[in-house]
Length: 81
Image (cartoon, rainbow, N blue to C red; front, side, top):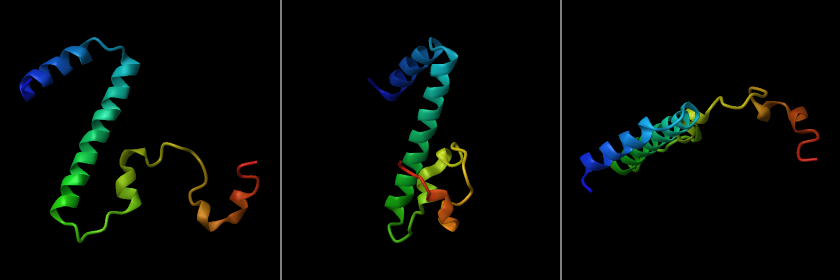
């Protein structure tokens, strides 16, 4: 299959998905695009460092909790028990 045929096939599949699955596909495609962008930036300039925040991308902020666990060791009390 050529790229145009693959895109057309993907669009046909997407048109048949329920909303919940469509959101999942959208998130996954966003992740793939971001990963591809990061990889192309890494290949073009290997001397630059990429932070964990850059790698985490869109998943930052999905979980609620204290702003910074590292600043207050009390947050770790009972962790893993």
